[in-house]
Image 1 (cartoon, chains in turn green, red):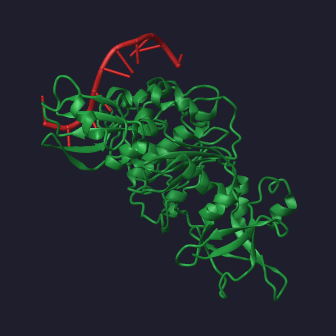
Image 2: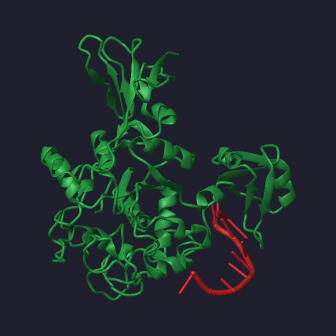
Image 3: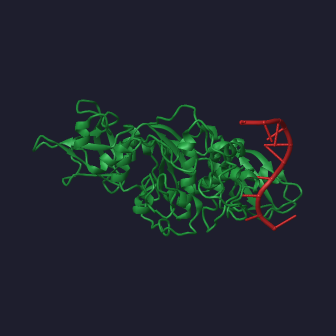
Length: 445
DNA sequence: GTTGAGCGTT
């Protein structure tokens, strides 16, 4: 294992950072010691100039001559103050200008995370791009991961049997066997990692082959038994146009952008608006369980492995609520929606979009995301944070096509500001990065 | 027969 010397400043004490087997240095390794660092540079002894280190998809690549004995210096993203200077603005690239002209975003949704991903992991990864105010795994994930579902139980298996058997893996804090007999049980461990480690396995308990898997959240989705079926197909409603499927965000982008409704003091009205329909299929027409939509989204997000981040935020303090009254009301206590940033309600819908597109990836949401972070993300091709080798290049079929059967939400996403013309694809007031670049990502102003 | 309760209601 080789180490390279890294310091925060040219005169600071340096830290030896371990390289990977292929000789690269992981950005995450750097971030672990220098939170927020986004790059590396070193003094080229020949020219006396500073030289940047190549960074591709989360890996620093050594100079042609190898890492050598240079002391590498951390580079930190420029934060704030850029947009204030007209001079700098003029010097900036068109892309930068474009981004500076749009309201900053501060919330990211991160999809496709492994179940094992911790908030610490999220924080560590994203600190390279700026201050991370909040990194949250939907709150029940931690709780739920302590509990496993035990399928194929037989009636002779008692709670004590299960407790005794599973105790060899770790402390069992609870065993639940539904009555009347339903051929399954839940076993809760003290240590989530123990629970996690057992998932997917078959075990023999008292001669019975049982199957252990993740416990699915219960009491979710507004009473649809916690599953994604229910009325997500949006049929049977009475119509009306406009309004996103979730309802509550107003029929058009407000002064603060399309998600203003979620950020404004007044609550969205989950019960009105019509429109909507389903995220996945060709549902048209309205209806559907408004109140349940947000929890459904949450459930989906969780099933995808969802995390939310708040970066450098400038949220309207305490205002708004996540997705309107209905959603909040319908959210089970374990969702603790209040703990989510405002943007989080909508990132959940981003999860829906990404899921509908069969993508795992990133979504950026919210109002004030630092452009530095965004451009960093762009520069890195929005590599999958969990696997920098896999950029999210999944194609995005049929989203921008102006399909009349497109889902209400996607249609809404594509509408032109103020016009409500759903056929104006890709003309919405927010960048259609997800569509145009094929990333599983959306950015909202 | 492979996904749980009740509390009491933002």
